[in-house]
Length: 40
Picture 1: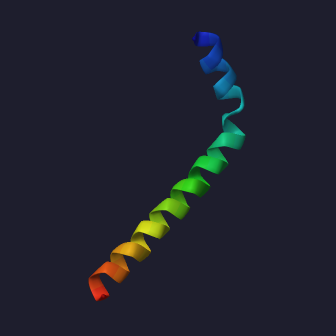
Picture 2: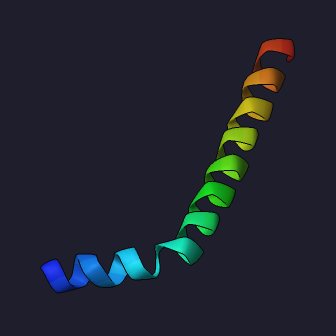
């Protein structure tokens, strides 16, 4: 388990960008849905 975590920490720089990008897309999507939900 510790080896698995250590391996993840080594490859986190690539994953970090993907996580932030997906979170930003997810947040923007919900913001648009919320905005349309109010004005529809």
